[in-house]
Amino acid sequence: MRKHFFWALIALTAFNFSCESIQDEMQQDILLKYPEKAKDMNIYEVNIRQYTPEGTINAFIPHIDRLKNMGVDILWIMPVQPIGEKNRKEPLGSYYSIKDYTSINPNFGSIDDFNELVKKAHEKEMIVLLDWVANHTAYDHHWAEEHPEYYNLDSAGNLQSPVEDWTDVADLNYKNDDLHQAMISEMKWWISETDIDGFRCDVAGMVPNEFWKKAIDSLEAEKDVFMLAEWDEPKMHDAGFDMTYGWEFHHLLNDIAKGNANGDSVVAYLEKDTKRYDSTAFRMYFTSNHDENSWNGTVFERMGDAYKALAVLTATVPGMPLIYSGQEAGLNKRLSFFDKDTIDWSNLSYEDFYSQLLTLKKNNPALWNGAFGGDFQEINKEQNSSELLAFQRKKDENEVLIILNLSDSTQSFVIDKKYAGNTYQKANNPQLTVNFSENQEPLLFDPWSYMILTKNSLNTK
Image (tube, rainbow, N blue to C red):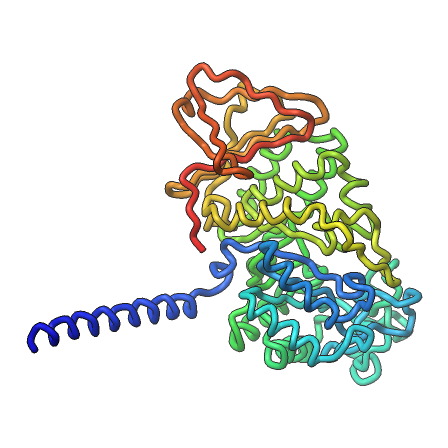
């Protein structure tokens, strides 16, 4: 009897310990806040209008499974609200000319459809950001009639556009404190009614930081949110944003593809960016987005054969990589901004490429975002040309080496002797290894080619 009681007691103790461990892990997940919760995440921009032939929220929802399988963590949904009709840019207008902040464009679906999108994403452990346009509204937004004091009016008392070419939107007046409260109320509505996880804020730097600080504090009182600012200035992080755009880096990538910049340019940029931004700030890097695709060209137009190498760079430097709708299908046309222009999904030719990059980032703590990843350290600069960029990121026992030929000519790479005796796995095929020796023969890199090597890679998911 004592024997049975002893083993029963052991089993009960083990069960209680197991339950406590699970509870501790759950409690840690609950206590974890952004940006740390997004330390190993990536982001994907969803253009609802162009995503499917139907151009609806419901038609997009089945793609969530595919995106999850590809490794996507964050869904940034471009504006889904009704588009203004007054001064509309024909025929369908700009997503960023919002007529009503708290309703759904009937061409896209209903609020129930949007709730289903969020629910499905949450079931897949993905988070959802809604694109938010705080700087301006459509000319026929109801505030224009009810609260003209919310707007910057011209000398004749008429609405006016914030930028000459933005003729379909009216500039808001953030000197009016009542506008602050009204806008915050509209943002909180989406948190309470749809359970989204944060916002991507359009032209955020054109709106005073005083408002953003107030808004973000208010949103955080409702729910822990992730906030992305479409702006490239450190001040946005002072207001409470978790992540900002790496616009300057994007333009640098375009210059590299044209032969007007090189590996030295990348190092100089990252050194400058590290001094400007606190290490806790997340920076978003990309080869395309809705603006670049529609107005400046596809990645193939702007980057040509350099495209893959530059995409690798965005996924391995200290920042969060963005993928735009259709890039995994080799999107090779400029999507119309004011009309229906469906993405062709017939050939997911780049899906494996992106999946490997996203998996690489997730599985290697050295590549995590901001201060949660390893520092950028250039290697072997003195032995290699400016067209060849080699760098290391290391965190604890996890190390990643990235070697990229950022030119249209063959380059040779010589490893520093301090790496002699080290063995690395090839990221695209862990069964293959690279062993560096003291008398290592130079490695030859074809134009725009690259190699990613890992050491003691830890799968932390």
